[in-house]
Length: 329
Image (cartoon, rainbow, N blue to C red; front, side, top):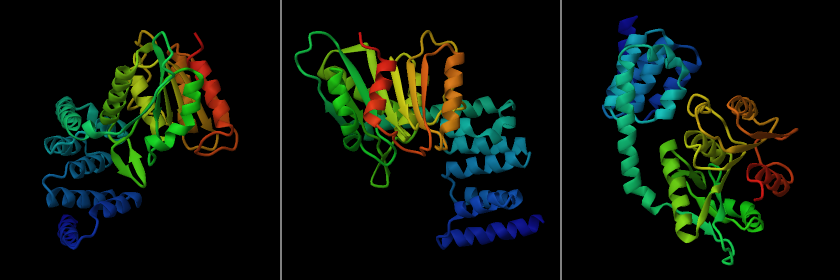
């Protein structure tokens, strides 16, 4: 059996040289429940490219699924040594939960954290400096610090495309409007990429808005849609001090990557807008329950028959959501 596995590995390495996709072969094997075959493919991927950190991570997941926790830890260590830095990907991998109990796992976490910090430093000093930010200023007659609305576009969208949805609402509230833009190309637009990079882009945009006008920190609200809703969930729960209110349309809550903090002095107010046919509906229900359990103020607006998209009467719905998360002062 082992000899057959070695023969297969050699064949896969040869096929990789012809440009065939080993990762697709891995997905196909795992989808068939052929974990032994998937492990052989993952081992071939690791051998093919000594710099492929994700291949080593895939090998760790396959080995963990086969109950080989010590070997899975070894593959995770290899992934970290190769530069693996996707903290959220590691956190959401439930198959690795038995591996987390092993003594060496803390060292893996430390290495991944160091890798993530280095990647963020490179991002801040390189691509992030050229990131696009769209600003719409409030009327200049204001005599006190202004509210700020931070708009987060959906994955595959752009700041300019998302701005019209929020421009009139910001004007009604006398608020500054700022819309950062992701930097990971996706379709005709942009994705937010790694969470820490998205956080930096959002916080950078807020800092720029503060340079343009005095901003009231108690009136900063984020409005995110779809992928922008995911980023809004993550940032608001990792930095609950940053926003007074959070409006998320068709966003996804992931407890494993951004749990509701129980020890936060104060959570922002949340308005969650979701269709009952959206595959993210259950996660929004879970977010509502977790926020209420933590003593947070949350309003869940459910739209019958709606899949993944903007709710009907979106201007009206957003106006009501903004009134909930940031009541007039």
